Amino acid sequence: MTSTPSEPLSMPAAGVIVTPVRIGLGLIACALLVLPFADLSMLGRSPWPIAWDILSGFLRPNFSAVENLGYATALTLAFAMGGLAVGVMGGAVLAVLYTFRAVRVLAAVLRSVHELIWALLLMAVLGPTVATGIAAIALAYSGIFAKVYAEILSEADQRPGDVLPRGTGIVSRFVYGRVAVALPALAAYTSYRLECAIRSSAVLGFIGLPTLGFQLDSFFKQGQYGAVAAVLIIYFTLIATIPIWLRRPLVPLYLVLAIGVLVAHPGPPIAGSSLWHFVTNDIVPAPLRNGSWSDYQTWRAAAAWFSGLFSSQIIPGLIATLIVAQITLALAGIIALLAFPAGVAALSGKIGSLVGAAGLVVGRSTPEYMLAYLFLQMFGPSMLPAILALSLHNGAIIAHLTARQAEQICQTLRPDAPRGFNLYFYELLPRLFGPFLALSLYRWEIILRETAILGILGITTLGFYIDSAIGELRIDRAVILIIATALLTIAIDAISRGLRSSLRLSPSATTRCDG
Image: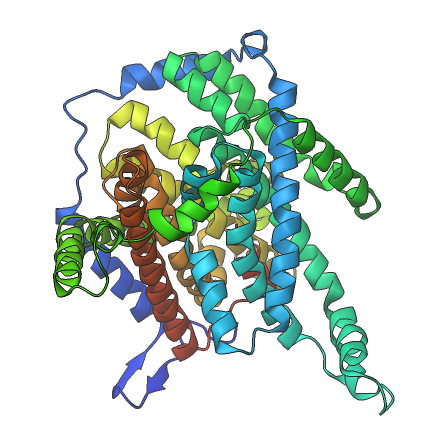
């Protein structure tokens, strides 16, 4: 990160001067502009009785009410490791070919669709099978790994490759001169992604796969909040102890165990004929499927079909998704600026920073889907649960990473450096605002993906229409809506990259580990 808030950067083409502060204020202004159009209603209900019931259950976790908790935990890990392994292989292949535009477009499409939406689509073909869970995680993660691996390889030191003997082959030069140098960074990012994969695997339970999310969904619906607390304690323990049980020499053993659990899991068989029917029939728009492609009336009917879908679902879904995402981006940034001092010892003390860091870890480790489900019980179906869940989750991620950068700065301060509010406002904030803005912009695309999936809970984002179309077995509509989601995400990512580039704010290794 090379820019600070006080460092103006001119944009000759536009004839204006932009700074990180102006970009930040512009994002907040956009959020305020769309705020009047956001549905923040609570349907006349009071959230406090439900909040008290949930809190009471969390204070008295009931492990005895949970059956097969160990098996659900094992499946959660198995899905995560299996999907991650396939995603790593796919991402590595795409990263090697990332210089080709077609590969970059493919990777962008894969990562722009959330794994939960991939799972919904695959479930229509494969059913609630092991293959559905593995493929859903692997597809999204292949696109993510392709982009990040390519960035890491391009940033690696080029000098070792230059000193290899002249006759060294292309493959050997790439492996020993590029991959070997970047291997620590590649391994670190891959290890971090396991935490993200566990989150993804748990959330897959909300749509029927037997992971921890399935247990949470069942107990939430039954109002058994003590059992909900028990499941969440297991989940958080699983995440928190990753540095303890994840050891590189044990990875092959974990993969073998994961394969064993998945193979032994009883489930419906994959219907091979369904895949062929899906490709040749289900995803084809209904007018084209039922008419002759050489007939003008068929294409006229297809145009009317698409026009109706565009006006009744795509446009409302896009607007709702953008409203929620824009408000979330601004609110998450505000939360992060207020919360990151809690994780900095120089600002909150040693004990306070430990407590604050633990709170930030819980916030960033809790899947946004789980938080939204919780708020949905309290506030009812509106944009409010989605905005609160996404803002808290993403705000905790940005705050956690900003706090880590603040700790590094604090180690270089003079002994007579200011303390307290003066340290925050005059030392840390000016130096961190540029990196903080880069983190926020980097999260923009991810927030949009997450906003879309929360439609599955009844909030009328694009995910709502996708879920409805799949539920009605209108796969052709679902595919068009998924394409619209992917295009919107790619567009926001392009805008985000453009803003970061204009301000010379490039994602760092820390930024990549953002979940």
